[in-house]
Length: 401
Ligand SMILES: *Cc1c(COP(=O)(O)O)cnc(C)c1O
Image (cartoon, rainbow, N blue to C red):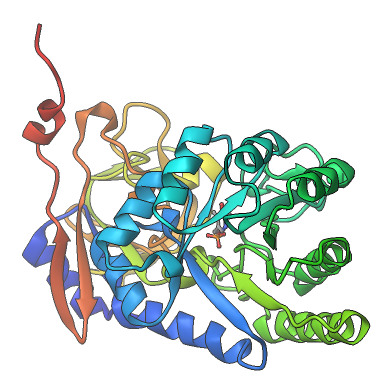
């Protein structure tokens, strides 16, 4: 545990539950692992902000030297608010209006476009005056779950590789300054070979586009969610990229940069969702444990069948039993089925691990239940970085007629 059991209990006692707790040093450690693994390459890392956009987290990510990848114009504005300079910000668009792209261009950040349609509009508006990247759909199946696979032949993301002829024509006619070729094939990619395949494919394309100087391999590095799972082998990916880049340099004389957009890798393990046990309900077949949280706070188990490790913080030495851990939302709302946990009693405090990425960020106020508070531990000190939502917050935007 990157935050100790005592620290988690202390945070829950101080700030109440349900509560998100993050650990600043874990984020820095993960970033350092990336920087070390790719140190022999000309590499840059852009934190995929959509995993967790709390401003204090963004400021921390900036302070450790990481750049940022944004998936909406508002994420770009949050990044600027957190102190990132335009040169540190990358915007990866999908299914967006051209007006949003124009707004992002006016902010001076790097832009990746994912359709020929928007690229045509971009060409008409800017020609070669503003550098641009394109997202390619490589038709590779990768990732932990169909909802998080984004590079296959049925995916909405990117310009399909079979349309590269049209891309080439557009680039040549408008003399576009095509700087970056990008792919992001999915999340929770365990095999280095997926990245190797991606880099091969982008280098073949780079050969066709002499202005390209950056290969962006996206995010998707896997972190262990289950106790027996392994992290993506970064050294193996670095070696594949190094070999491929060296070969390309020999052939073309061009020196390339590699960019990555890690989301989960940086923040997943740094976060915990803490919830209190409200009801223990034994039945003939299953013992249900109800907590004061649910899919409104952490949707990943219900949405992606994601596994989140759970600890009973306040009874760690209890006799283990199988439990169905459920939320308080009025529909099927399971965190875990048949999960062995030390005996759970009403009032116990449970920790859901690996909740830093796509946890709070995907939270809602479904059932008119408020979103949790967020706390950041830095040097052993917990600081509130978002107060708990209130009923007034839920009413604030409504116009009573
Ligand atoms: C979501 C996303 C990422 C981050 O994915 P992780 O699995 O969290 O690393 C990176 N790049 C793009 C374009 C994305 O949409």
